[in-house]
Image (cartoon, rainbow, N blue to C red):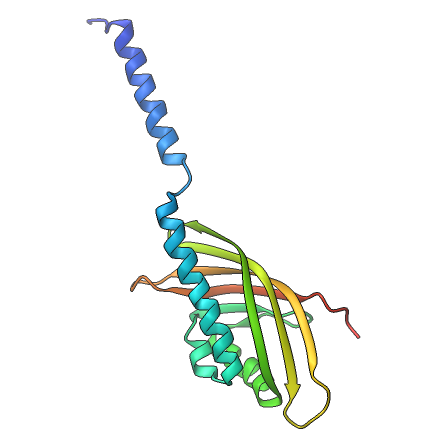
Length: 162
């Protein structure tokens, strides 16, 4: 058996290490920037839909098996439960919501967003408005058409319980 010269072995090892490092490197900024813009567009539609009381538009932002984890409640699983829970909120309150994204991370067809929100819930039957502010973390999933939808969402208020 013919021995390979030592420089060939080192060249192969260096090539292998280079390929491994390239595969493990973080995604390029070119991927993160459009995903961040798409996630911010989701939050714009999210808040404008709730502010308009448009439950169908809001639901269109979710995957069919989306899960919402509201504070002090059981998980809300799937669009039927999401509709029922949030219809109850929109039936009782006029919503004025704004969302600020502090961080977006991307890993292939998955993304997460972390940020803060402020809202005022005004009872439709009268009474004092309820101010809310809090934080959220959301997992989004890229769809076959390239759009992003909310897949998992957890949020909680910074306002102490009464």
